[in-house]
Image (cartoon, rainbow, N blue to C red; front, side, top):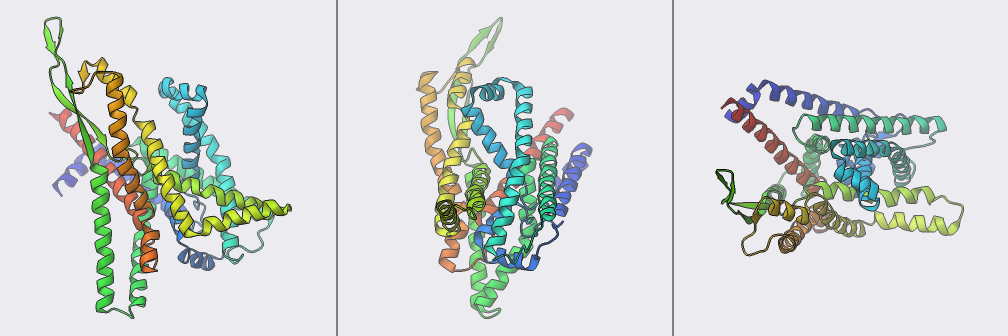
Length: 432
């Protein structure tokens, strides 16, 4: 409590917190502004009976289940970011712009990402509306006219663009990643409804409030606490690589001669792989919807087969797990380059005891990083498919948010706490 009061006493930090909170409130308002022409009761029934749509709804902050102007959340922006990161690897000129362009280069890449988000939003909006309509037997949407389609697609595109701007604005206040905070706000907003739904499911299955019902509820709480504890442990876990610096003489002064460590986190990628995997999994179903009504029978049959494949939760869970593992390695390779780290250590006169500076050090870092990333990737994958595992054992969807929502919420809270703590340390240092 004393730490919180100290934070609140800092005028600039208090000002930033209040602005970020107000922006997050705006995102929650957008998630409850519905698009006209939709049967919301049929839509709610569809989400209550489909685990896959429930996962998509997490990343839209509940906007998808409300069929709001923010129904896609920041998903298209995340997809555009993935595409741009892949293009920087494939296209040499973009790669040089990202690496050597400095702040101007990164600003240019960000601008390309924003421009790419607009057509992706319109494409995903159309595919999502068609998917929801067909999954509900056309009870959610009935007889959309051309003008209604135009209004719906324009509204959703504008809503996503506004969320994208809010996310980037939040990031500027250095209280965490704005996109992650928007997703976090959506998850927290759904917690009361999720708890109520889980409690009602348990009481219905056990015939009211009884001893067995209380035991079941306590079991779910115990599982949730274990998941939170595991997430915190993996998020904070790291392998410390010892690094020594040789003594160097510059002028009349002696520098170096110290020993420190290089921290390698077990989960270098954070929650990004899960967010990436969800965004990628949207595409096959959306694209298949475009061709499901094709006049060519072969194309229509292939599209229907793709739709049926991704509606099978077992297959979906397996692909989801594999994508999370793959994206963990992919994003870790982007944010941590052992060759660059090895060169920087060597330039500063450092070395890892028992290893030669340069190539041998880089190979050692690659080896250690691959091993610890494997553990982090498997853990993230298991957390991602936790709802499917629990549903398979209990035959209930009481834990709709599951491990994915908990993982994002815990990771975002830890990140925000570190950001606030670093700002407090900086102000304490300045006061000193």
